[in-house]
Amino acid sequence: MNRQKHTGTPASDTVMVVHGPEAFDSGDAGWLADLVRPRGILVAGVMGRCAAEASGRPVRCTDTRPSIVLAAEQGRAFLVNRGKTPASGRIFGELVAGRLPEGRGLVHVECSNRTIFVWNEGDRRLAGDLADLTGFPIVEAAGSAGTKGEGRTIRGCIPGEAVFVNGVVIGTATAETVVLASGSGTIEAIAGIDLKQHGVEKLLRGGVPDLAAAWCKSGRVRSAVPRHAGRARETGRIAVIDHAGHTLYREIAEGVAGVLSIGDDTTAVCGHICAHHGIPVFGVIDGDGDDIIQAGYAPGSVVVETAGERDDDLGCEIAASLGEEPVSWEEWVAGTLEHLGGRVRITVDRRGGNGAVR
Image (cartoon, rainbow, N blue to C red):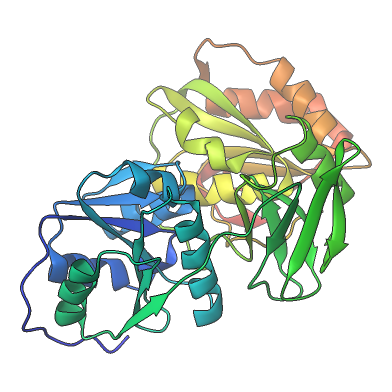
């Protein structure tokens, strides 16, 4: 990004709401924070939090969607995003703007094409201040989320990439626009997607989601490699994450010695985030991953692939044997592997700090 000096004044009475990891990984969020000097930086999203932690910036984090965060702010606030393409970045801004209360506009700094969007007659004075600081042009825009009824349209997809609903991969995009519907107690593909039935089953465990309100996205959840930290602790509680990597931060509180992750994509996400915290992972997979993130594992981590069983079933069997009492991670891993025997094969083994991948 070609960053320039500014002659404007800081907008220090504002809150900067950053969505996703790419704004931090690219340096955009840090550059903007130094220019604007906001009174607060609020990060929405699990992977955004991971990237913010790696950046070392003091921020507040939430797993609430950006529209809810922005709607709750009483003063001036603006959204920072870096879409995978300028088109997808604009689509995201339109979606957020459409979810805000009626009469509440949005100022959206889209870093992928260095543009400040003023959605639905948002705060033009704030947009002007940001334009003075950044040198970015202002574009007036209008639109809505377009999520009425039982269907959902997900735009800005790239064919071949994973499609998520509420953090679960439910299929692969076959077109730039994916159309889903909910009916007869399930999720149906209308256009632009090859559904992954196993993923749909996982999603439906919590009931049929309200597609109009669901968190939907496509593509990788983060492109940067994870940063690694030293081992946090060797004895403590084991947290269980079952096909819901987006809930990880709620579970890795003080006292956790390791994480049992169930599912290919969940294990990749848990390994990535936990590497930064020095927490090992015992991952149970069955080989149907969607390459949504670059995996990385803390020392002590082990990933096993099932031999003819579903990761759901074997993972839940292991989870059922866990209690709340503290355990030695190394002893628990060794005992679990011995118990599983030929039912699994080890694909990642970082015991002893090595990085072996078998």
